[in-house]
Image (cartoon, rainbow, N blue to C red; front, side, top):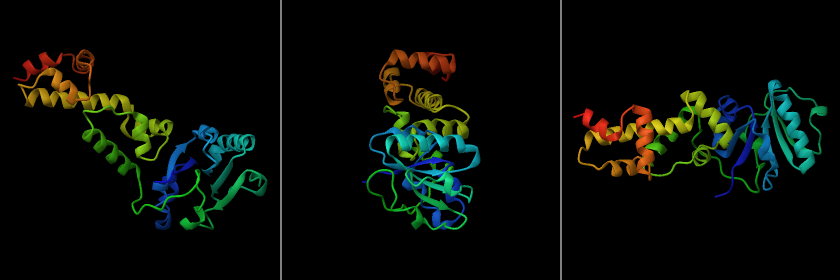
Length: 231
């Protein structure tokens, strides 16, 4: 499987929601928001930047990074930029979406060598949240790293953290802890003969002592006390 491209600036969803022709772009990019540090990665040749006036400082800094590191930008805008804003030495392509909206104008440009075929299913905020919740439920007994979940939903880790807090009003790590403890509560209640250590492992904790501390912090009770209280 070939690598996805990187998307900076305004969310790709803001663009893909405008027309059906662009609705499949979501799955083709990792949405990085204002995390322009990706331009310094050695394997990134260029990135897409969806411009708006409030993001102009980030755009200008992106251009400086590209000039210093010999990178390129594909710039998407709403007829807001003039030729002087788009120096040919660093702008691979300028796409005015008030004139061009077909997906073909965005390709074959890709941030890493090669491109992927467009997915038939557009990715929205709701589908991302559903995918995240399903992943947590299906992998409750395993280590779940934030960077892996971010990659799964095509977001950079930094942008994912902001995205998740915006939609859940809680950090990803705190949310994951709540889900694990809630799972453990259900196990303790519904399986009275299950050892606490077994419940801890199934909830994703390999260290039982740490599990006990986390559980008590969240519920004010130890797992054993909680179990006794529910019977």
